[in-house]
Image (cartoon, rainbow, N blue to C red; front, side):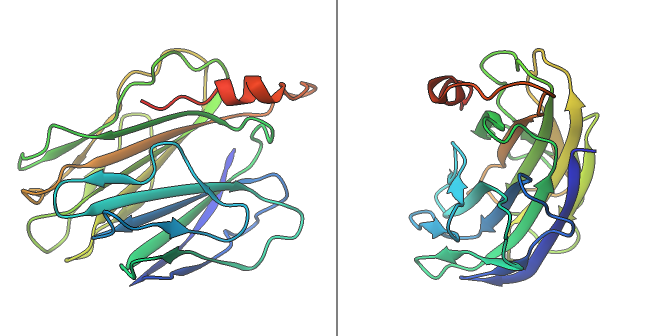
Length: 236
């Protein structure tokens, strides 16, 4: 399976440290998810080799809730931990996912980032933007949703149909997080993806959703030229 594993740092900190996902190997694609309950004007940096996906940071509402998502390709000598820093000192939690079997030259095939306008319902929607065109490769999808809730207690999420939930996390006073994956999706139209949350969101925020399509490696295929690689990235 292309999805390999994940690890997490659930204690919020301005410089959270997370272990390398178990089994990480060379050319694995690592995805870091950092929800921040403030940080609207902040900058998050990671270790060497990490960069923000297009659409990150994604900011929701006047209260500063922000979703940061970063990626890197694993090298042959990865450290045992990774530390990320918020320049404003705002606390963040951290999840890192590892995917194997992706195209190491052009793995970031599509990105869709959206602050949903369908917000203030007792059961609210995590609605992604549709990709601007069809995906042109077999892909592994990562659905990331986050929001601020109006009340404490347990919040549960439901991922889009066909997705397998990996993270369903809520913590009073912090942003909730939903992370779900779908492996080996054939090339074709993606459309919008919708998950749900069980509580009323804060009146100042709307659900933030980033969907990433990682292109699987094709046996025997040569890497496309750099201009073609850049052309495969599209953010709505």
